[in-house]
Structure formats: structure tokens, C-alpha cells
Length: 73
Image (cartoon, rainbow, N blue to C red; front, side, top):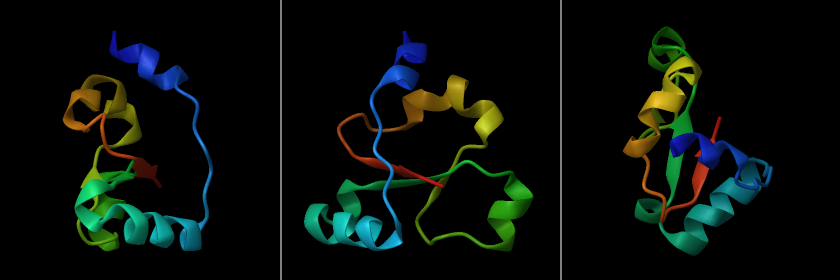
């Protein structure tokens, strides 16, 4: 069940660590996930970021590649 993914251990990282993750893994091998509302996303976001608003996350988890690290902001 997808809800079990919410109980997967997570690690908090800062901006510098996120940049290093991209260097280490390659830009195509890291998913940046923006969980804000569409209006906030349109105002400013990291290029290439996937938008899934927090309220939709539980029904859209299948859009994320489980093999890639996900950086959520």
C-alpha cells in the first residue's frame, strides 16, 4: 500500500547537501518535489522540479520513481 511509504525513514538536508546530492547522483537521478500550491510554484520554483501539492501527495505517490532519492521542499 502506498501509505506505507510515509513511514520510510527520511533524512533532512540543507541546500548545500542537496546540491552535492545532484553532483554525486547526477541531475537525472534525483527528483526534486515541490509540495506547495500551484500558485506558489508558478511564482518561483527550482527548474525541473515536480509539483505535487501536499494535499494530493497520498494519491499521486505513484508518479515518483522509488529508485531515485527525492528532495522535498
